Length: 81
Length: 210
Image 1 (cartoon, chains in turn cyan, purple):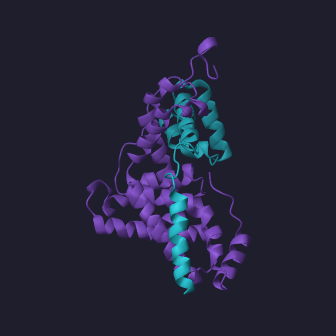
Image 2 (cartoon, rainbow over the protein chains, first blue to last red):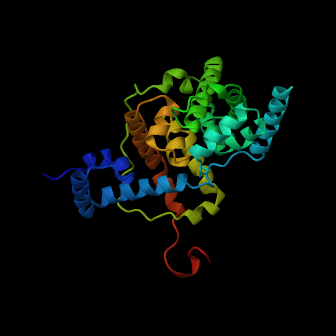
Image 3 (cartoon, rainbow over the protein chains, first blue to last red):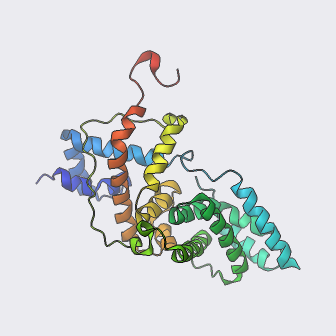
């Protein structure tokens, strides 16, 4: 039995993470070969995941580390005394 | 991008700090800083509050280091302290209904169908050189309901595995997977139609790298 688009969408995230069992993955792959909608949904979702994972998207605020270690230094000094 | 963490280095470091070499705590906490900040940012949705809470968390970690049992990863332990710090602050504030503690449960049904497209042109990482793209992605993630934002930040941005994410957030591994799936579909639906303009032009003169 062939799986439908809705069913494929339920596994998009697991598919991207390589967590779909082999047999189901083969069925999904077969569906993707002929379904341009699901292919585009999968490609766009994977593309979004790759883009947001780039270190340039979320960066620590400028000076965050310096301020943190300065505060820590004061705490360490206090604990010595 | 997380810094490499080495459990043996951590264990040795903790032993020496507790024995009096307190300055080593700087090195111990450094690899946890990013995850710590982004977990708090995802809870508090505000840079200044997240930074303040991150500093308080680090001080608490230092003061309570003797309580670390070593039965979880050090970073997981740090993140659970951060989470408590963040939730404590939310409880005190309780002003924003959308992100109140009630919203931190899975009860809502919601619509998690993706944006239906018939073709997709890959947006390359080089497109992030345009600041508008980064801003668009950040706004989309910040706009997610809190329970999905947390998971996306830890899994897809801090690249933590399912187990550590579940431990840090105090939820089951199954819940991490369900929330991540929903978060990714919400992001796809929001972003896919708006990202098209960032696809490189095909062919020749106006392509990337020109």
